[in-house]
Length: 265
Image (tube, rainbow, N blue to C red; front, side, top):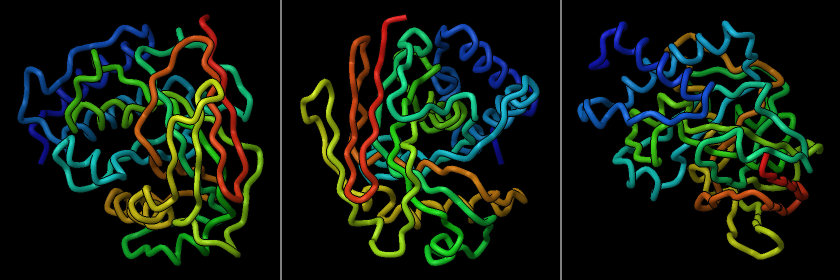
């Protein structure tokens, strides 16, 4: 059970809502309440999501975080986290984002899965995800923290929509009939210089396994992932800081490339 009362979870969710609206960060919830854990984070997240949906935001998919062992060890957990993503935060290949729309943004290259059929647990396996998948898409995620100075523990990042800021998707959805997503290679560059490499297996060992984990985790909540959803399966490398004027590009085997530009407005 969460440590927070519903009133406390609502209060914290409202604080995050205001931080998103104003781009003014707030102290970590765990700074004053170090006992708060992942369940408390989801209770806060639920309140934040309800506020955003009430404002007219539309859920278009989900993002996974903490899909790599080093990140799980850093935050002292043994499983990923997740949050819904919103249509207003989705950009196309070549888009320009404004650094001033974020607080402390970083960027990650990821593989996105696009569903052609509904997907649900509780016994979802990677082969079920394969059958439900339209294809994979090259993607970049802007991660941002409404928590001051990124001083987060697991409750804080879960509450804050798994530190989601925005995402950019390439225009091509590539069927996965003839290759293994775990073996997809990726090179990531900043302003023309290579800064990271990765492969699909970095996302919980297999991007399809990551989606299966999400379906199984949502099942006790009575949630089915609907057809058309885009699922960000987790970073393939360490996040990279963003500054005005930066140009980021990720090039994937088979999936092609995606580019994102950052300006200072």
